[in-house]
Amino acid sequence: MTQVADQGRDRISRRQVDKFEERRRQLAASAMRTLAELGYARTSLRDIAQNSEFSHGVLHYYFRDKAELITYCVRQYKIDCVTRYDAVITTADTPEGLADGFAEAMAATLREDAPMHRLWYDLRNQSLFEEAFRADARDIDESLERMVGRIVAQYAELSGRPAAFPAATAYAMYDGLFQQALLRHFTGDASAAATLAENLRATLPAMLAPKPASRTKRS
Amino acid sequence: MTQVADQGRDRISRRQVDKFEERRRQLAASAMRTLAELGYARTSLRDIAQNSEFSHGVLHYYFRDKAELITYCVRQYKIDCVTRYDAVITTADTPEGLADGFAEAMAATLREDAPMHRLWYDLRNQSLFEEAFRADARDIDESLERMVGRIVAQYAELSGRPAAFPAATAYAMYDGLFQQALLRHFTGDASAAATLAENLRATLPAMLAPKPASRTKRS
DNA sequence: GAAGAATTTTGACAGGCGTCCAAGTTTTCC
DNA sequence: GGAAAACTTGGACGCCTGTCAAAATTCTTC
Image 1 (cartoon, rainbow over the protein chains, first blue to last red):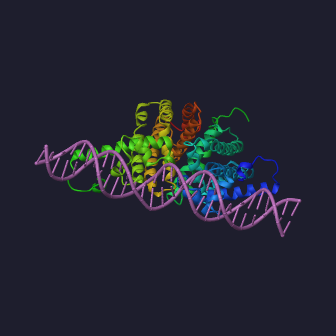
Image 2: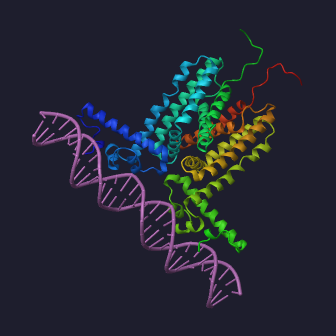
Image 3: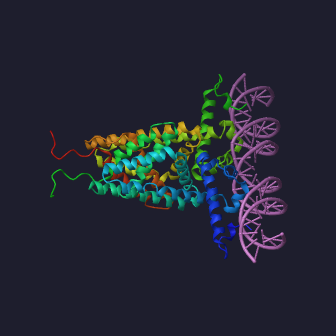
């Protein structure tokens, strides 16, 4: 019997569950490597299996079908992604320090994880055509939005000025900046990451409400 | 003999050439309808032919292969796209009027051409995996960037303040706003277009250099 | 209206796809 | 150590893909 169909049954030892889940993660990791390299449209289950140490049949033992595998991959990606920037926020104690940390963290992940990011955008776009991916993509987008929201809020706090836009707006704009940088990165522009960092530093001040008129009321 | 291979030969009457080009456009239009509906990954040449009034074999009479057909489609898309916003610029004579016109034009095309836009993002993303599409995608991106640049420049002119960021930066941010709105639109958010317009109006002032200190030097 | 060119249809091809399954191999448990 | 469960393999299935070419049709031109 395939274990996929037995997920809800009574007696599975903890070791079994752990091993099952571990193998799912392992296969999902192979899938992500392959997807990041070939893109959604060109990646077959056989490609994925060939990039793992298993044969192609095993994929249907751990995942009901291709959609479930890819959905699982997207969820894994999220877990990695969200926790990546939080260190930056707590460390910085000046607006400029925060801007630098944010800008450098983004530039670094562009340089190091570019194939992964193009996969994310590929899958998010697939969600526009395939209902099945929509909820997960939205979920990841929302957690990225919260992350940007925390950055901007902290930047506002350190600057002593309120944020000018909601988190969703700020996230959309920074996502756009990142995506353009990714496009340039893949066209061979070696300075794409540096330009991205520069853009982030330059635009953060514009995320805050304009400075009050120079004649201050009090204090 | 296929005419595709004969493009460069000596004696083709103008009518022949026109008819040949016209049929290419016609087939490309069918292809775009189909691609906008199914997405790149799920669209086959037979799907495209079925959405036209021809059989699937004819596609290879007018296009060398699938890549050439899709490249042709992308180029057609560009022609439609770029000339769409220029009316807005010349009409407006106040910053607010320009912002309104820009915001409403973007919101309108989101409402009316949403499937086309998701196709554009799909193909631009494919260009991250398939070298063949990269140049065309970059080309379109650049002309969109120039369009946004003209909008911001005119907005700056009408406001009497200089633009704060290069056109590429502004375009990236507005592209991000549009893409997020598109995502929301397809998740069934009926207010996506209105929110987009609101965001555009709210963020345009942030594209200009901060107001000078209240004590002006002269004039 | 017939000859010839241009266009379109139709069917075939080789190969890849997701999925499934029967047969093996390994692990677990008493 | 042997029975049962879990896991893995590799092949088979039906379907779909892009491409191609020969036949059928339509259009041009004299």
